[in-house]
Length: 464
Image (tube, rainbow, N blue to C red):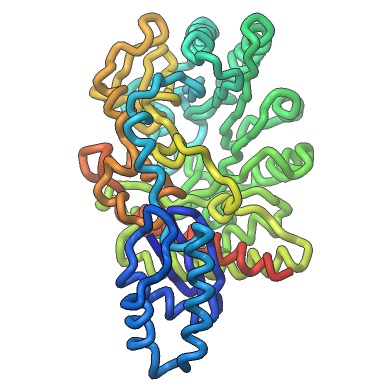
């Protein structure tokens, strides 16, 4: 499968199945464009037929000379011979084995606090309540969750635990106790915990920073961007904005972590589509690791992203990509999560096929110990999987997630982005279509644009 696009003056050809990326001149770009109409994915490299070559010459003879076309056809044939064009989709062969594989749990999202000290207007967690009641996780429940993770992790040594909310720092003593407990279990069971934390920063202080710098592999800092943008959507419950309180703390925290192993994470909405300005504002504040995500909300919400917003959103990604390249060349670069693309290796086969592993390898745990496929399903009782005392008992839901992959989703099978997004978010699919085997269309469009920008960035920076 071939995907072609032009961005920022670059003509790019992506061979989807092999992952090969080619920056093409006009003749090469047009020759491949014609060939895609006639050449299917090849089970094995083969010579182009006289008929296929003839079709190229017939369609392009008015634009290029015969010699130019023949020279490029020779170059195309070399790429085919190397498995870098019209390559076979080898991942289809993994699907049967992938469905039957024994699943181990590798990560938990611990809802350490179903409570929050902000009142973010777009919060899917309803200010921490998650369709339920305010609650804090006890150390006893948290320890049972860690025990469950160890017991169901099989031979996997490296395990991940994210402290999430609401706002985790509202239950800080339990966070510290669970980290200590996890470190003790590492020695007993030859495991290693990678702890992470997501915080709005309101309660961030020196003691929290010091502990996180010692124990947390990554910390996500929630901030939406410029003061007016952040304070409109992330106020306190009294309506006062949070920007002035948290930004100095975040700046100091990022510096204390040597500008690594953290993310400043924002959310953009229909009300503020110019998110490129917010990303550059982060960079100007000194942050080097950042992500700004599109809000996902029902269409009736005034801040929800709409289909008619997409052209402006695409322009913003293009603007940000160009600034990203310029600042990198000037020696003041930053990392934007969605532009970080590994073209040489990338995710393993399992992740390419099924993504985050929600419902199987990754589970969310409520303050009272219930299991859900991920944090976005918490509170939806039809997705309740079990709890820390019984384990996973709703195997029907677990298996539905286990069998959910890019080949099980009709919209994904022939999409060029399928091995980069791995089929997208199951929760978004369910919330918009009532099934985890569909795809959130607006999200897909944005994801494809981000991938094209990321590939273009690689091409531009490789010229250095």
